[in-house]
Image 1 (tube, rainbow, N blue to C red):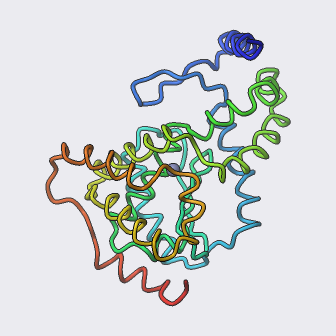
Image 2 (cartoon, helix red, strand yellow):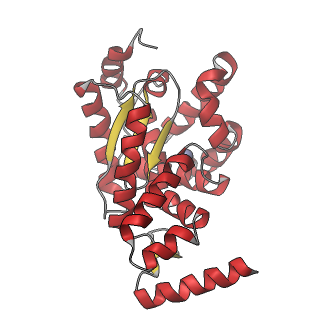
Length: 267
Ligand SMILES: [Zn+2]
């Protein structure tokens, strides 16, 4: 009950301070208290922690290629108020994640498990879906509704960003809700198709996950803990893909394989 009143109070404050609703491009208005510059500042702080704890792959050609695919997706993404950045984590784990503010990371193990550019686009587009739908920001708002949000509203921005970035770093590996994950899959297929990619790339990648779940479950531990079951995801995507009628979709197997050769024998 108290929580309800507090939320109401914050919403009123928000109306007064003019940060109330944001048109998300998802046919719905949402109450977003954390502004885009604040979201980017939070992401930049979390990067420092992520990059201290994980090794970033230092291969400009491969990173440039991942970034090229990512920027193609960014061009069709409805959220245009931030820049998207893509990096590779040098680890055999099969996973990817997005930080608030458009910072997207894919693990080397995930790249090594793929066999064409459409699959890479699907994974990056799923992560972009989390950023575009502001899942990270909404999760932060929910988790820290009394503390940091009141700091934001009371204009103690520095304190709010410090508090929120500490929380964001922990939330990244706790995962989003099931609904958010399904929404990111749906948006991912949408962005991939808009950018000209074959949306079957997402299904193919899920098939790879299913094979790996049997053979090398350790590599998927975080991904499976933070996402709904792969079978459920396949079911939803299959029904979305059947209504897409686009010709000449990109798969780009040759270039992808040539690039990924750089990771051979690494994991
Ligand atoms: Zn996800």
